[in-house]
Image (cartoon, rainbow, N blue to C red):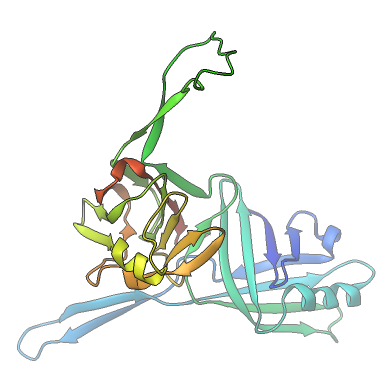
Amino acid sequence: MIRSVTVTNYTGDSLKIELAKPFDTGMLIYNITGIGASNASINIAEMSTTDGALFSSARVESRNIVLYIRFVGNDVETVRQKTYKYFPIKRKVTLEFETDNRISVIDGYVEKNDPQIFQQQEYTQISIICPYPYFYQGGAGGTNITYFYGVNPLFEFPFSNESLEESVIEMGQIVQEPTKSIWYEGDSSVGVKIFIHALGTARNISVANLDTQQVMHIDTDKIATIMDGDGFKAGDDIEISTVQGEKYVRLLRDGEYTNILNALGKDADWFQIAKGDNRFAFTAEEGISNLQFRIENRMIFEGV
Protein backbone atom coordinates (compact mmCIF):
# COMPACT_ATOMS: atom_id res chain seq x y z
CA MET A 1 0.00 0.00 0.00
CA ILE A 2 1.30 3.45 -0.91
CA ARG A 3 1.30 5.72 2.13
CA SER A 4 2.71 8.93 0.68
CA VAL A 5 4.27 10.59 -2.35
CA THR A 6 6.94 13.25 -1.82
CA VAL A 7 7.98 15.52 -4.68
CA THR A 8 11.17 17.62 -4.63
CA ASN A 9 11.44 20.26 -7.35
CA TYR A 10 14.57 21.57 -9.08
CA THR A 11 15.09 24.27 -6.42
CA GLY A 12 15.09 21.71 -3.60
CA ASP A 13 11.62 22.50 -2.23
CA SER A 14 9.71 19.39 -1.13
CA LEU A 15 6.04 18.56 -0.63
CA LYS A 16 4.84 15.36 1.04
CA ILE A 17 1.35 14.24 0.01
CA GLU A 18 -0.05 11.65 2.41
CA LEU A 19 -2.77 9.62 0.75
CA ALA A 20 -4.71 9.20 4.00
CA LYS A 21 -4.57 12.94 4.85
CA PRO A 22 -5.57 14.85 1.68
CA PHE A 23 -6.75 17.96 3.54
CA ASP A 24 -3.25 18.58 4.93
CA THR A 25 -2.08 19.57 1.43
CA GLY A 26 -5.38 20.05 -0.37
CA MET A 27 -4.42 17.25 -2.75
CA LEU A 28 -6.13 13.89 -2.98
CA ILE A 29 -4.17 11.40 -5.07
CA TYR A 30 -6.81 9.02 -6.40
CA ASN A 31 -4.73 7.17 -8.98
CA ILE A 32 -1.11 6.70 -10.09
CA THR A 33 -0.02 4.93 -13.27
CA GLY A 34 3.45 3.93 -14.45
CA ILE A 35 4.88 2.73 -11.15
CA GLY A 36 5.02 -0.99 -11.92
CA ALA A 37 7.69 -2.65 -14.04
CA SER A 38 8.44 -0.71 -17.24
CA ASN A 39 7.92 -2.22 -20.68
CA ALA A 40 10.84 -3.94 -22.38
CA SER A 41 11.73 -3.70 -26.06
CA ILE A 42 12.66 -7.16 -27.32
CA ASN A 43 14.61 -7.30 -30.58
CA ILE A 44 14.51 -10.54 -32.58
CA ALA A 45 15.83 -11.59 -35.97
CA GLU A 46 13.54 -13.55 -38.26
CA MET A 47 15.19 -16.54 -39.94
CA SER A 48 14.32 -17.43 -43.52
CA THR A 49 15.29 -21.09 -43.20
CA THR A 50 13.97 -22.02 -39.73
CA ASP A 51 10.79 -21.67 -37.72
CA GLY A 52 10.46 -18.80 -35.31
CA ALA A 53 13.17 -16.19 -34.67
CA LEU A 54 16.41 -15.62 -32.77
CA PHE A 55 16.70 -13.32 -29.78
CA SER A 56 18.96 -10.36 -30.55
CA SER A 57 18.78 -7.93 -27.61
CA ALA A 58 16.49 -6.36 -25.05
CA ARG A 59 16.24 -3.03 -23.31
CA VAL A 60 13.94 -1.42 -20.74
CA GLU A 61 12.12 1.65 -22.00
CA SER A 62 11.83 4.98 -20.21
CA ARG A 63 9.04 5.34 -17.66
CA ASN A 64 5.98 7.62 -17.72
CA ILE A 65 4.42 8.25 -14.31
CA VAL A 66 1.05 9.99 -14.19
CA LEU A 67 -0.39 11.36 -10.94
CA TYR A 68 -4.15 11.92 -10.80
CA ILE A 69 -4.82 14.58 -8.15
CA ARG A 70 -8.15 15.99 -7.00
CA PHE A 71 -8.13 19.40 -5.29
CA VAL A 72 -9.95 19.44 -1.93
CA GLY A 73 -10.67 22.02 0.73
CA ASN A 74 -11.98 25.57 0.61
CA ASP A 75 -9.23 27.16 -1.49
CA VAL A 76 -8.70 24.95 -4.53
CA GLU A 77 -7.19 27.84 -6.52
CA THR A 78 -4.27 28.11 -4.11
CA VAL A 79 -3.84 24.34 -4.20
CA ARG A 80 -3.86 24.33 -8.01
CA GLN A 81 -1.19 27.04 -8.09
CA LYS A 82 0.84 25.04 -5.59
CA THR A 83 1.12 22.25 -8.17
CA TYR A 84 2.81 24.70 -10.58
CA LYS A 85 5.52 25.27 -7.96
CA TYR A 86 6.22 21.65 -7.14
CA PHE A 87 5.61 20.22 -10.63
CA PRO A 88 7.12 22.89 -12.94
CA ILE A 89 6.84 22.07 -16.63
CA LYS A 90 10.01 20.66 -18.30
CA ARG A 91 11.93 20.82 -15.03
CA LYS A 92 13.53 17.95 -13.14
CA VAL A 93 11.73 16.58 -10.08
CA THR A 94 12.40 13.73 -7.69
CA LEU A 95 9.54 11.48 -6.61
CA GLU A 96 9.66 9.43 -3.41
CA PHE A 97 7.05 6.71 -2.90
CA GLU A 98 6.66 5.37 0.63
CA THR A 99 4.89 2.03 0.94
CA ASP A 100 4.38 -0.29 3.88
CA ASN A 101 7.81 -1.90 3.54
CA ARG A 102 10.15 0.38 1.56
CA ILE A 103 10.85 3.80 0.07
CA SER A 104 11.42 4.07 -3.70
CA VAL A 105 12.95 7.14 -5.36
CA ILE A 106 13.08 8.15 -9.03
CA ASP A 107 14.03 11.26 -11.03
CA GLY A 108 12.00 12.58 -13.92
CA TYR A 109 10.97 15.62 -15.94
CA VAL A 110 7.48 17.14 -15.85
CA GLU A 111 5.85 16.68 -19.24
CA LYS A 112 2.39 17.98 -18.41
CA ASN A 113 0.33 19.49 -15.61
CA ASP A 114 -3.22 19.62 -16.98
CA PRO A 115 -5.71 21.02 -14.43
CA GLN A 116 -9.43 20.77 -15.24
CA ILE A 117 -10.45 24.16 -13.86
CA PHE A 118 -14.07 24.25 -15.00
CA GLN A 119 -15.04 20.88 -13.58
CA GLN A 120 -17.34 20.90 -10.57
CA GLN A 121 -14.63 18.96 -8.73
CA GLU A 122 -11.28 20.35 -9.90
CA TYR A 123 -8.49 17.90 -10.59
CA THR A 124 -5.27 17.61 -12.56
CA GLN A 125 -3.19 15.00 -14.33
CA ILE A 126 0.56 15.41 -13.93
CA SER A 127 2.74 13.46 -16.36
CA ILE A 128 6.41 12.85 -15.54
CA ILE A 129 8.90 11.24 -17.94
CA CYS A 130 11.69 9.26 -16.23
CA PRO A 131 14.60 8.55 -18.64
CA TYR A 132 16.13 6.00 -16.23
CA PRO A 133 13.27 3.57 -15.60
CA TYR A 134 14.38 2.02 -12.29
CA PHE A 135 13.60 3.16 -8.76
CA TYR A 136 16.39 3.59 -6.21
CA GLN A 137 15.98 2.53 -2.61
CA GLY A 138 15.51 5.60 -0.43
CA GLY A 139 15.44 6.34 3.26
CA ALA A 140 17.79 4.94 5.89
CA GLY A 141 20.01 2.27 4.40
CA GLY A 142 19.48 3.53 0.87
CA THR A 143 23.23 3.39 0.24
CA ASN A 144 25.28 0.26 0.99
CA ILE A 145 28.94 0.89 1.91
CA THR A 146 31.62 -1.82 1.76
CA TYR A 147 34.96 -1.00 3.42
CA PHE A 148 38.09 -2.83 2.29
CA TYR A 149 39.96 -2.03 5.48
CA GLY A 150 39.47 -2.24 9.22
CA VAL A 151 41.12 -1.14 12.47
CA ASN A 152 42.69 -3.60 14.91
CA PRO A 153 42.99 -2.37 18.54
CA LEU A 154 46.53 -2.46 19.94
CA PHE A 155 45.68 -2.32 23.66
CA GLU A 156 42.91 -2.70 26.20
CA PHE A 157 41.67 -0.12 28.72
CA PRO A 158 42.54 1.04 31.31
CA PHE A 159 45.80 2.75 30.36
CA SER A 160 47.69 5.92 31.15
CA ASN A 161 49.96 8.06 28.97
CA GLU A 162 50.50 11.26 30.92
CA SER A 163 54.05 11.95 29.76
CA LEU A 164 54.44 14.92 27.44
CA GLU A 165 57.94 13.78 26.37
CA GLU A 166 57.21 10.24 25.20
CA SER A 167 55.59 9.42 21.87
CA VAL A 168 51.81 9.27 21.77
CA ILE A 169 50.49 5.76 22.30
CA GLU A 170 49.31 4.12 19.08
CA MET A 171 45.67 3.17 19.67
CA GLY A 172 44.95 1.04 16.61
CA GLN A 173 46.31 -0.26 13.36
CA ILE A 174 44.64 -0.05 9.94
CA VAL A 175 44.45 -3.48 8.33
CA GLN A 176 43.94 -3.85 4.59
CA GLU A 177 41.32 -6.26 3.27
CA PRO A 178 42.10 -6.22 -0.46
CA THR A 179 39.29 -8.66 -1.32
CA LYS A 180 35.66 -8.24 -0.25
CA SER A 181 32.20 -9.41 -1.33
CA ILE A 182 29.22 -7.17 -1.95
CA TRP A 183 25.82 -8.81 -1.50
CA TYR A 184 23.17 -7.21 -3.72
CA GLU A 185 19.42 -7.89 -3.64
CA GLY A 186 18.12 -5.39 -6.22
CA ASP A 187 15.90 -6.24 -9.18
CA SER A 188 18.48 -5.31 -11.84
CA SER A 189 22.22 -4.66 -12.21
CA VAL A 190 23.45 -1.29 -10.98
CA GLY A 191 26.62 0.81 -11.13
CA VAL A 192 28.84 1.58 -8.15
CA LYS A 193 30.91 4.42 -6.74
CA ILE A 194 34.51 3.61 -5.83
CA PHE A 195 36.50 5.73 -3.37
CA ILE A 196 40.28 5.42 -2.92
CA HIS A 197 41.95 7.53 -0.20
CA ALA A 198 45.73 7.93 -0.02
CA LEU A 199 47.51 7.89 3.36
CA GLY A 200 50.80 8.11 1.46
CA THR A 201 52.10 7.75 -2.08
CA ALA A 202 50.92 4.86 -4.27
CA ARG A 203 51.43 3.90 -7.90
CA ASN A 204 49.24 2.32 -10.56
CA ILE A 205 46.07 1.14 -8.84
CA SER A 206 43.81 -1.60 -10.17
CA VAL A 207 40.27 -2.58 -9.16
CA ALA A 208 38.81 -5.91 -10.33
CA ASN A 209 35.47 -7.67 -10.28
CA LEU A 210 36.65 -11.23 -9.64
CA ASP A 211 33.38 -12.78 -10.82
CA THR A 212 33.26 -11.08 -14.23
CA GLN A 213 37.04 -10.61 -14.65
CA GLN A 214 36.46 -6.93 -15.37
CA VAL A 215 39.27 -4.53 -14.44
CA MET A 216 39.73 -0.78 -14.02
CA HIS A 217 43.32 0.48 -13.95
CA ILE A 218 44.42 3.95 -12.82
CA ASP A 219 47.77 5.12 -14.25
CA THR A 220 49.22 7.40 -11.58
CA ASP A 221 51.95 8.62 -13.93
CA LYS A 222 49.18 10.13 -16.06
CA ILE A 223 47.76 11.73 -12.91
CA ALA A 224 51.18 13.34 -12.40
CA THR A 225 51.02 14.74 -15.94
CA ILE A 226 47.49 16.07 -15.45
CA MET A 227 48.41 17.61 -12.06
CA ASP A 228 51.70 19.15 -13.25
CA GLY A 229 54.12 16.84 -11.49
CA ASP A 230 52.30 15.26 -8.53
CA GLY A 231 50.93 11.73 -8.81
CA PHE A 232 48.67 10.11 -6.20
CA LYS A 233 49.92 11.42 -2.84
CA ALA A 234 48.89 11.58 0.81
CA GLY A 235 45.54 13.28 1.33
CA ASP A 236 44.33 12.67 -2.24
CA ASP A 237 41.09 10.90 -3.09
CA ILE A 238 40.19 9.16 -6.34
CA GLU A 239 36.47 8.83 -7.00
CA ILE A 240 35.09 6.58 -9.75
CA SER A 241 31.41 6.32 -10.65
CA THR A 242 30.04 3.64 -12.97
CA VAL A 243 26.42 4.69 -12.36
CA GLN A 244 24.41 5.14 -15.55
CA GLY A 245 24.14 8.82 -16.46
CA GLU A 246 26.74 9.76 -13.82
CA LYS A 247 30.01 8.18 -14.98
CA TYR A 248 33.25 9.90 -14.04
CA VAL A 249 36.82 9.48 -12.78
CA ARG A 250 38.06 12.41 -10.73
CA LEU A 251 40.73 13.41 -8.21
CA LEU A 252 39.96 15.36 -5.05
CA ARG A 253 42.99 17.36 -3.89
CA ASP A 254 42.94 20.26 -1.44
CA GLY A 255 39.17 20.53 -1.72
CA GLU A 256 39.09 20.79 -5.53
CA TYR A 257 38.01 18.18 -8.08
CA THR A 258 39.96 17.46 -11.27
CA ASN A 259 38.78 15.26 -14.12
CA ILE A 260 41.34 12.42 -14.49
CA LEU A 261 39.42 10.27 -16.99
CA ASN A 262 42.57 10.20 -19.15
CA ALA A 263 44.35 8.30 -16.35
CA LEU A 264 41.89 5.41 -16.71
CA GLY A 265 43.17 2.44 -18.74
CA LYS A 266 41.84 2.27 -22.30
CA ASP A 267 40.39 -1.22 -21.81
CA ALA A 268 38.65 -0.36 -18.54
CA ASP A 269 35.26 -1.89 -17.76
CA TRP A 270 32.55 0.19 -16.11
CA PHE A 271 31.51 -2.20 -13.35
CA GLN A 272 27.92 -3.22 -12.71
CA ILE A 273 27.00 -5.41 -9.77
CA ALA A 274 24.42 -8.15 -10.27
CA LYS A 275 21.92 -9.82 -7.97
CA GLY A 276 23.72 -12.02 -5.46
CA ASP A 277 27.38 -12.08 -4.42
CA ASN A 278 29.89 -9.78 -6.16
CA ARG A 279 33.58 -10.23 -5.28
CA PHE A 280 35.91 -7.24 -5.70
CA ALA A 281 39.64 -6.83 -5.18
CA PHE A 282 42.13 -3.99 -5.46
CA THR A 283 45.89 -3.80 -5.78
CA ALA A 284 48.72 -1.37 -6.55
CA GLU A 285 52.22 -1.69 -7.96
CA GLU A 286 53.57 0.34 -5.04
CA GLY A 287 52.15 1.62 -1.75
CA ILE A 288 49.09 -0.60 -1.35
CA SER A 289 49.39 -0.25 2.44
CA ASN A 290 48.89 3.50 1.96
CA LEU A 291 45.41 3.07 0.46
CA GLN A 292 41.93 3.03 1.99
CA PHE A 293 39.34 1.65 -0.38
CA ARG A 294 35.54 1.51 -0.27
CA ILE A 295 32.65 0.86 -2.65
CA GLU A 296 29.18 2.38 -2.38
CA ASN A 297 26.09 1.16 -4.19
CA ARG A 298 22.38 1.76 -4.14
CA MET A 299 19.66 -0.83 -4.70
CA ILE A 300 17.29 -0.49 -7.64
CA PHE A 301 13.77 -1.84 -8.08
CA GLU A 302 11.68 -2.47 -11.18
CA GLY A 303 8.61 -0.98 -9.53
CA VAL A 304 7.23 0.53 -6.34
